[in-house]
Length: 290
Image (cartoon, rainbow, N blue to C red; front, side, top):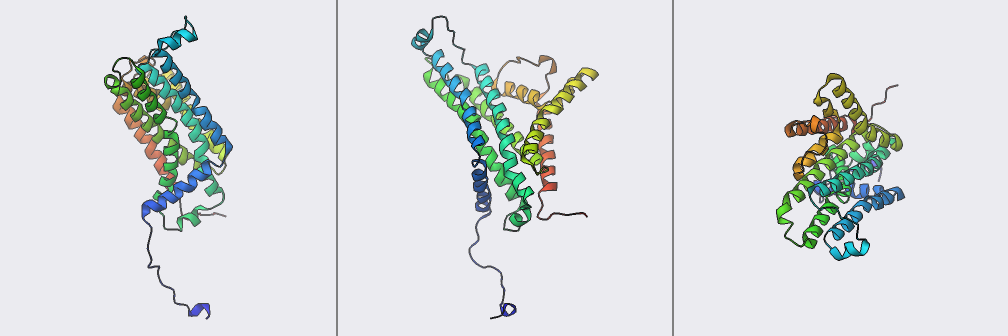
């Protein structure tokens, strides 16, 4: 039968749910992220500090172990400051991990002009981006709040006195602070990667987007003698927010203390800018001007 004699009609079979389509994007995103040996190496490095923190908790709660290691060894006190240091270290490692993984999730699709093909399938732009976002959320959670809460549980178990119930704010603050940081660096990594077709350049731009404005903010604050120049300094903002969430006294940056609502508004503005960048870049068609 000739082609023109065929009667074409719409598909009437079973349709997968929108969530299932998003999970397909996420599944292939996980496969792409783990296809590099560098990803495996970074994950191994990310688990070194929690192992050292676990050893510190063991020493702090076991007098016999401290005696075997050395009489002069003073174990660190396990308190909110200890978990703040753990959170800060894991968050910086999460930034490195996001700077490596995020470009692999998007730049390859852009370089191969695959977005028109992908978005021609029954999946929306939101579903495509959210599927990539799930990959980063899951992988960064494994190196931030999950090991942090496991350390908290172990400290509650190993402490000779009831400790977990009296320090529940540490666990809540650690979880909330980790989620805020993960959400920020994930959307930032995807947004910046969507505008660059070279993975190495995208990784460098992600680091630059965090540290270059921080330097500019420090200069503005020094010249104008105002603390609000530090609104460009995401590390300082997040550190102050982590301190307040976990109930730690202001250890550093006392002279640049910024109100919590202003910090949250700044983070929201950054996320909205990233969403606008993704909305402008993730398209089902590409306009070529010649």
